[in-house]
Length: 236
Image (cartoon, rainbow, N blue to C red; front, side, top):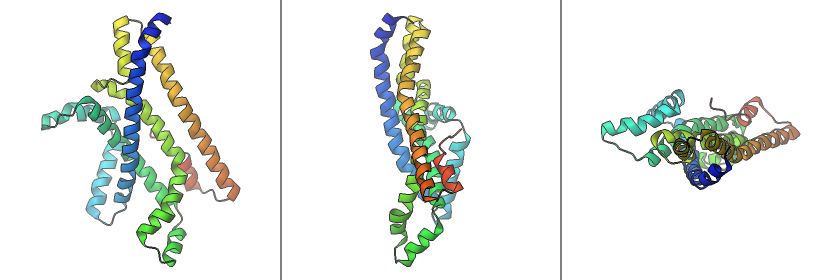
């Protein structure tokens, strides 16, 4: 590893890191929000809405993200819809992760004991109030580790946006390595930076999982469905 090349490449790599983090933040906000809406939509009384959202979820969960990204960027222009690289990457990541997160939300909502809803109705609460005040607080609490795990995966998947020339960290590393022919130094730098950013997230997930399991165990209310949600988050 050549220190002089590493120092020279560092500003370029860090600029790419900023774009990586920006994309992760935007896609995280969009997918976490849309995931809730899609989860509610899949439980809607409207059959057409349930079927359309179900089809969307199945399509995006059954096909590779790279193919979805390439399709949005290279194929949609044939239908007159041209999207610049960065918006195309954000759109692809958001659609992909929304499809997974909505199932996490839906599973968490269905895991809340039905007795909770019955008790709330007995107190005269409306369905919307029950969802906001009773069901969602319990559901969200059980899936925080899974959501954090997905955000770590999202950050790593931003490297695939280099395929459509989004100048995130991986793309800038590829360009600099091609210019200097020092692939070992550049890719080692990129590897270490990804690890430095992703490892704290992984440890946070481990910590949250242990806290959640310990908290439920202390109250003696751990159920198999809740354990599945807590340990969830792996999409492959």
